[in-house]
Amino acid sequence: MLMGNLSRLLKESWALVEDQQDKVAGYFYARLFLTDPRLRDLFPVHMDVQRARLLGAIVHAVQTLEDPEQFDSYLRALGRDHRKFEVVGAHYDVVGAALVEALRTFAGEQWGWEYEQAWKDAYAVIARKMQAGAAEDDNPPFWHAEVVAHQRYGRDMAVFTCRTSTPLDYRPGQYVSLESQYHPRVWRAYSVANAPRRDNLLEFHVRALGAGWVSGALVRRLRAGDPLRLAAPMGDMVLDRRSARDIVCVAGGTGLAPIKALIDELTTYNRTRWVHVFLGARDRDDLYHLDELTQLAARYPWLSVVPSCSEDETFTGERGHVNEVMSRYGPWAEHDFFVSGPAPMVRGTMRTLSELRVPSTRIRYDAFTEW
Image 1 (cartoon, rainbow, N blue to C red):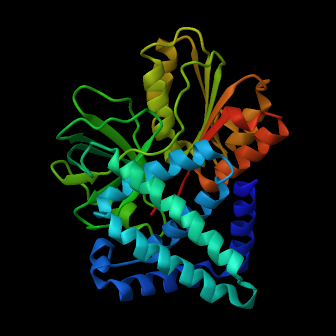
Image 2: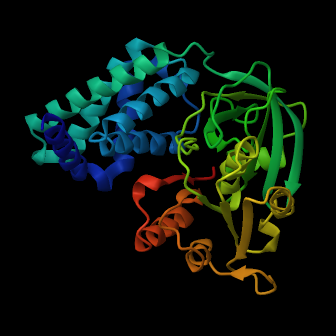
């Protein structure tokens, strides 16, 4: 009951500032750096994306408060991940005070002592769990890696492989934050596209979109021999080996990366679970790894691959958005689902799965934002 009341107060108070998120974040960082100017050196020169990431983390934490297992897992992973910023215990108090002040400032007259105390209590728990996650991690705050191969696909996509100097322990389907020499102190999350290997090689898929200056550098400027830094793995879109249910994977664009890693893991042990992969793209050029997936399907009888294009009238396969194509097959009520790709595609797929009455407990997903 106490946790439910806390969750209610947090959501009510967040609603007071939700339409002013950018201003809240700007005020928060201004107060943070004014209180301790040394903290500015931990952040990139350009703060636009960092503001969005802070708010995303806050909203996610608030939304998972009533799910203790997910709440704990997310925050411990977040604490491990923040070791890459060289965050120490003293920083958490400064962050908490700046956060509450920013919320109070923009909530206006409706802000009361109950909301103030709720955020202080919630942040105390958040900070404690994040620090516990950081403290229990024996790994380094980040791994050094070197690019060993880089290949362009089509207009704006690349696949590159790097080798870490020491093993990085992760599970297929997870993602890591990555920093390149072209944008120091700027970290972006990308899924690893292969299962762990003894040679410490990791594959990443990147698309350069719009104003994505980091992804643009990774696609157009990155070369073999370039150094990278990789942070601790995060994400829970991983296989449950205890499940005997068949699997459906729905991927769009570079969302193929974690799906490819899951398939890579399944090739090492699977004999009984059918795996259906629905791969969506705008046109044939965006189906950049279709030949490789087709070869895998020919090698493993349990794997099937259905490609589709939404805007290519010359494509001879399935036409339409990938969630629509997937819904034409089935039935899917007894399957485990993995969904990965751009946020609009993931939202569309989640709506379709809800209409098909697939239980949410059987769905794991990642929505990507390219920068």
